[in-house]
Image 1: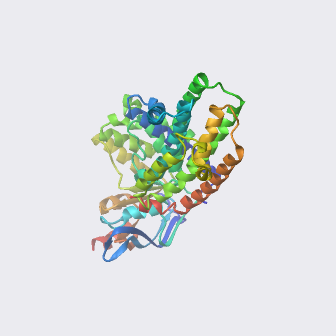
Image 2: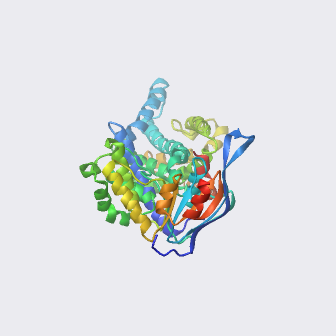
Image 3: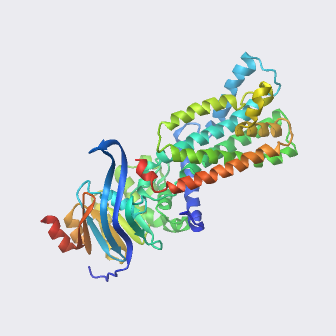
Length: 233
Length: 259
């Protein structure tokens, strides 16, 4: 990646762990540490890849970085001046509301101000390519149309730090290309992006640095080449 | 406190739009939509009228408007409590996706129920002033009484919202308690109709105080008794503050519980 990477941290996790209380015990305990001991730094302007297989604690790590949950041990510091948003598609959608109303609702929930939303609604409508359906209740939508609307809203949120949980492309073939293009555009800009994936190729193609998470522990941190060498070893 | 005023401004939009979305969704789900907001409490008033007014032959001349005022305010109370109690659990998937101050959820529930109540109550006021007694100056006290009940609904709804995620069975407990309260709060009788030794206990019930106040204004054209209303308002504000602090402390733990 050609853009300059500063080393000012925007998120710093130090030996962070997150534990869930369970109704049924696992291994004799009703506490389950979804994240055990994770240390990492996200730097301003970089694209950081987080690599891990299913159950490695990736989603919990995202919630921790997004400020949705607090660490039960260790520390999680998030720069209070940066808007850090976990990108989710279709947040808060209500089936009886129109595409327009759901776009407003979803954008409000993702942290946009109402007047900003009003300015960006036309862009959202055009990007989603829903035509007349934008004014129809979303229960009439196909799942592809729903995903297109969700993605278009998400693309207009413009957070300072974008947390991406494998949402790279949605919808039919042509929209998949368009959405993948939009995501690549975001990463190439000087926006800070954290991308979670279990696919080494995706991380290698898009990220500056990588962190490998396994069973709630940080296994490796470094350049993509360094981490992939250890991951594949 | 995680909230500052700037955030409060942004979240006030979230609350308003969520409340609007919830109501829109509810209207769209039924055939006659908003008419249910009026019909639901009216039907329960008519049921009580059938039982106590006709079958048990109540002697009150104003029994029907008496019941209507009682059921309309009770419906608002009970609907707010049940809605608020389940509000956080109902939005658990949303809580996993974005950070929101958890106070938003019970507030949206209480607000939704408040709109429904205000709509139905406006119609009731019109009906009572035409068919029973014309409005007097005492009607000026009505907004204050409504505001006190709004505080009471929030004050009980917010702590319940924090409790139910940890104890789901609590919703069943809440409906049982509401059932009991609906019988003893004086929807279909007034405190002076019960034996003297129970009257004091009844007059300590905030919903009895509120229903008595509404009736004093709308049926008798008299000003409500202020000291008990003031006591309910003060108690509610204290409880609301405690509930607010409680939800703030649980703010980042609730998403781990409500999955």
